[in-house]
Length: 214
Image (cartoon, rainbow, N blue to C red; front, side, top):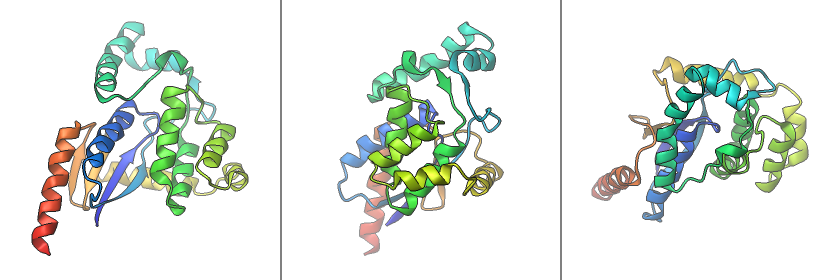
């Protein structure tokens, strides 16, 4: 097996598009060699715990409404191309994602990480839910057949918060400045939301190398 580490944030549209493209490629290789692990990166580590009004946040970040529209035009284009559904009109809040990252971490212990990441992307980008809300996160945990009562209890504590922040800081120290960043076999970094064709080529080359090594 080949390790595929994915550094991501569940409110990052490029991460959502990137996973959609990767999944399309993986569908072509039912026996693909990847073992996937998700790692935390907060786009907005200083976001207030309760989040912010999304429109106010984007206009503040991109210098007004026009700047926000221009910044998101490529997102809309690539989302449509990839088939990643995004209902921007439903997203009212930009949340702090530290707790969503804690849920992803706990899901990893139960081998449900990618499923929970999918559920978080759907909750935020499709349904417009506040994935900073403990109630929403517990509901997602329940959908993933995790112990929602235990997740609620953990979310009410500071369990693993320091670990998530340390892992985020480690990625930045290693040179990660944007997400998604995919790291193949602890060696090769593949930045950004690559198209399915790129992943098909990468996976094909890896499988060929593994066949030759046998």
